[in-house]
Image 1 (cartoon, rainbow, N blue to C red):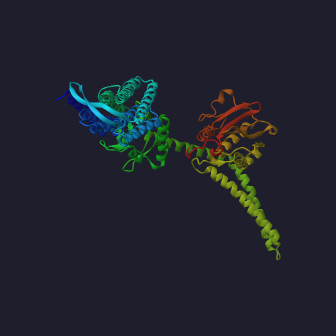
Image 2: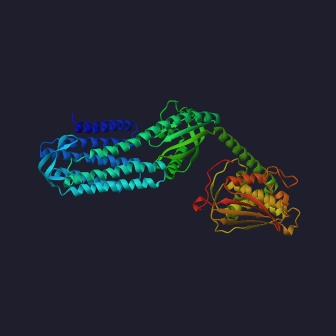
Image 3: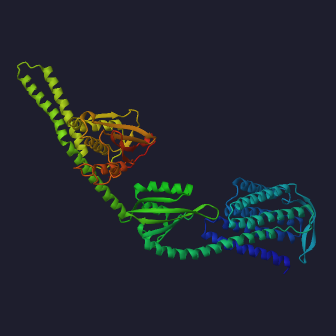
Length: 619
């Protein structure tokens, strides 16, 4: 057997072996397209070796030209495999450069089959036999070059430009591993594309008197790429061992801390979870879990919010955190909180997310119980406030009820007349209806304040809110000889809040202000309710009295539960008010002024006007 046969057979065997190995790996790692491109490159080198072998043993010019022609076709396959490998393995190449290089190579292959004997040779007049590796082989003697050979050289130049550009971009990432890949793969490929094109061109031009040999340079490229892929496989194997050991340690730590850990492989669309995580979501220990399966276990009311958070993390690679309800197959619901962090592959692309999930059902239940207790406390505060207003409200109710009684008696007297004045009777009945409506409004306000309820956020006009409270405190202000002033601009933007709860806060502050002026001369008793826009998203309400102010040492403790400055106070009104304002997203505080004390609280502007919108909740 000749050396040519042995060497070219070895080239074919090496390419076939390497290509088969990485094709099998690709079948297991379908998302790793670089493995498939490596196989395509190996097939192309095999085809090139076969074409070269056929040309060297050709007995006629036609057979020689056919061998070179099919070698060019194999070179087209080599171009697809090598450039595709760079595209998927580096991930840094420009798409338009890749398209230009492949387009030119495809055009060269078409011309290779449509002009002359092949892309390099237009016609062959004769062949000659030369000694190569110790045996005679055929090569060109007299021939005519194909003028289209420049197209092949242009295509090779485009390939080199694309590879160099992608390699430089990979080098600029700064990572040591990336720079080594840029030199090993990119440098080798660019050099041997230039070498192979130059050798073939020089042979076709008659400068070199030897057979065209292109398979050997690309065998070197194939070996360099195979070396890099083998490093990745070895690194993946080592990472797998380390991952199993880390998984065992992490599982022990997670079980001790009572949280479940998980990893979402984005490319495979699979979610791996620890045993506790699988139990949290109701999956079997051996279940193969996809992202869609996890989303189906999330409560329908929370699912869209979680999906939005995941899309945001994929877009900006920020940290992920969400709390939501999980619905198990048996219908049981539990609250969980999840934290995750996005990780990238060696090319900087997001490929997986790692995180942990904790069961917070007990905490959520405790929060609901606390909210219910706060609601009860707020209700108790409203009942206490209405108790303080009971006598004055009874007095205010006596006025319309007394008027109704007197008008009814007058109407009865008119009707006893044989010819009653019906117009007068109609006027009396209209007065009775107005007084009845007035009494009904007073009772409705009392019922609204006394009703046990949670927060119900609506859009409110702050001026209307204050005006609704004034009729409730007016009788008490009259009996105490307190002047009530309202200073609220009509152009304030609406706020977002609960009408009844905010009325309760105003009632508490106004009654406290009137209490603070108990020993102030009657002519100086003045209480002012003001409102202004503190900033673009906040309305500030102030209740100012003309009392003696709050001692400096007690000012900071006014909103503590059961702390009071009144001899018979319970210390609940201001803490309840503080809780209500906090639930609205605002704040409450007190300051002394030269003529008494001023209590302030803020409420966010409605979201339609650029402010905050609170969700409906219980307090």
